[in-house]
Image (cartoon, rainbow, N blue to C red):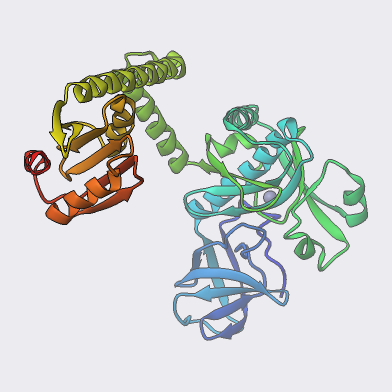
Length: 395
Ligand SMILES: [Zn+2]
């Protein structure tokens, strides 16, 4: 009938104790070193007697161990508990890394407050209350500071102090979401200190020195709500794998661009600039070609009015439309039929011949649809080749 002893004794992985309650697969022990889910840290896994522990939670002050099956022990029996070492060690490293990250944020974020935290098997999230715009440069600096604090091998310690005293210490970060839980049962609060780096009210399990955390890899940022910035990171194998993946992709990019890694950004920016310039040149050249093509259209007489008609390929209806308006000049009517996969017609007229009527005449004959004003119209989805449409108009 007590809280978990895990936060105060995070290195204990095996213990013996007495069973005080069994209800189906739920078991309460006289004392336990299993961590009960809370404050963003998931519960421990492990084995109790011969049965797997799948979840641990605190219910009305009792730590309740949820087993995979009904146990073969009873109230009053002595049992051995074994905490899953890999998982707990991961949680301790990930959890302490979140404090290191918060300490790093103290150096570069304005109006910093703690907005929440959570650990999953793959990654860890920390929510910051801050007015700072956390851009790419800020993320890079955060990661640099975190890994530097890990390398600096700072001691991690914890102590119980009065809530009053904790409140007076301005440097102490409080997790607003778990504050109630932290203060619920006593006038004391547990302060976790990373020497010279971070101070937080926290009831989780932590490593005793930052060097135990190993490499920390920032994965990205997002905005979970007004005034909040979420930063996600990984530790351990998923951090190492993520870094390798980024490296691989950076090497691929540098190889494709013929650049070394250090100058990758500059070279990529130059390539993008050059591409934009070429695109703009290409657009100019295409409109010149199109204008020249339309200017060369055959002039025919239809109902006593001169028409320039012809077909174009390799341009879309809008491009051809703009060019037709330019080229019309003194000619009364310009008709361009597009030879693309979905044949279209563009008509620019001085107004004596209604452009919309010409399009209707063609769509009535060949299907498709379209319309426009007396001076400009276009139609699409024609069920005929450009030559067939031109022949129809020349009659
Ligand atoms: Zn903590």
